[in-house]
Length: 468
Image (cartoon, rainbow, N blue to C red):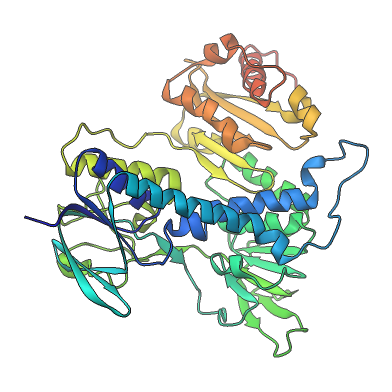
């Protein structure tokens, strides 16, 4: 008889949720975590810390005041690293404690050490100064997450050159910053530092930010970031990096087009690679992709039937929210429970300043598919709640099928965008039409009322009554 029904490698959102789901089914479960703290990237270097830093930047900068009291609030004193990271460290500690309590409450056995497969059913756990422990299991779940990809061009040994994990351990706030990479992480950090009044330049090889967004919202985000003080260099690549011996001198980055950028510090956000090295996966028959991602089927089962992989280690979409759902699906499949697949429509949230979120189709995708649609918009600066809070940049866009009037896509930019999108997400799953938002009664004044305004705008366009 195996020691456990399930051994989970990793204690991030996917690992924690998978372990708890199995324990709720009465299974014997173990979690192996290589780090001395629980929670993986989400709790320690990624999701929660970066969003906490965003809130800290907004607070310290007075950004949300927006001149509400006839005075433009600005940074009242020079922010220190201690100011910037205080709340972030408190949040990390609380989340680690929550995870430990959750695993303990559900009877999950925790092992601290590095996990690797000895064979298809045996996991070795090694830890410095301790004898190797071997765990046998009917099923194994790989939830080891990912790490920042480090292009060889950049000397990461220098204390002024950071990846997206290291930036949380900065010794001092940069006097100026170049962010290399215009993906979600690069855009989020560029906004955070710019909100603190730090000169920021963002370099992105593609000609637009976040190309998976609706084109209108990608362009609008770029405008908002420039208004925040971020200098954008889109369609450019860094050709060389010069690190001076004297730290008082700036780092120089030469772009392929010849422009030279100078900065006190550099943040490289060039994507992530799966944490699969040394796990022994390929030796037992598990297939890996280009950056180490585990190849899985729709049930997150690998080429080895009793080995599953979930979360960032399988690649896109690499969101904490989807990782937890992937773990649920894998556990249900492994133990034959009533299985529900991953929701067909997923929300995407980008915690830039302002926030951007979306669910469903974009205008570009609908045009490519030849789907007839109508677009309805509602700006936050004409929304009563938006006026109260001084939200001038916000916009909600709804896409409806021109004939059936069914909702096809939801796009939000502005305050609380990542919360507001869920109203539309629910409607998308319910296959709702314009009728839903016309008949719904929203609290007044709220930003959510924008759904009704955007719907009426779409109906006016259908009837030929719209005025831009």
